[in-house]
Image 1 (cartoon, rainbow, N blue to C red):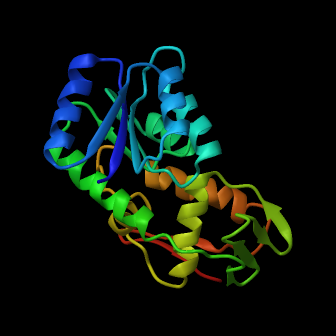
Image 2 (image 1 turned 45 degrees about the horizontal axis):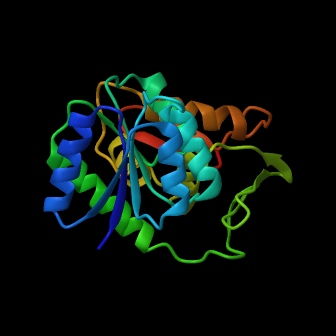
Image 3 (image 1 turned 90 degrees about the horizontal axis):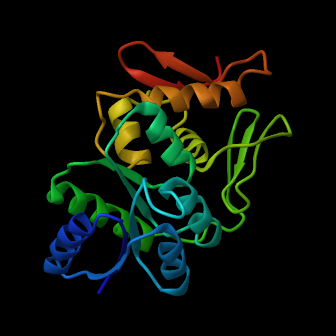
Amino acid sequence: MHKILIIEDEERVASLIRRGLEEQGFSVMVAYDGVMGKKMAISNDLDLIITDVVLPKINGTDLCKEIKGIKPNLPIIMLTALGTTDEKVEGFDAGADDYLVKPFDFRELHARIRVLIKRNNGNTSTKGFILKYYELEMNLQTKAVYRNKKEIQLTPKEFKLLEYMLNNSERVLSRTEISEKVWDTHLDTGTNFIDVYINYLRKKIDKDFDKKLIHTKPGMGFILKEE
């Protein structure tokens, strides 16, 4: 039985999510503030965390950073009443694996939980495994990224996006594919967070080099290619 921790200060919302998950066969724990949520996250063997962004004592974004610092592979879904691009980027930069805007359909939450748990259970050791393309090199064990032997600092989501592009180099990747494969979610046409992250990568990967590797194909998507 998979164990899920809900961190939500609105008791009615927490109760509704808990009941829905228990009906689907999950074991569910609930914390009503960030401090208690952190304690429960660290002291229990969990399969996934669902946390609100606005929480007493420790907000959801800071809480996500602290939990990921201790348990980097524990999937976290963030809930919020707002769904702006800036807020999503902030959540993903904190280490969140997915993001849902309230109010949401419970079936959507359940589907995303299944995807994240399945992905996490399927993780295999990548010790010593290196991805390379042109001057770009990524170490999946140490999380280090280099271009022409110059180290590049990436956030967790930037790293995951670049990893997917390296694994699919010289192939055009649509926004929908990136959304589904990198963020395990369907593309939200109301925001442009994928474009934001592509621009972040460009500034770090291409800015200080004459030859650019990340390119936009208008109307189609993006490609990692030596041109």
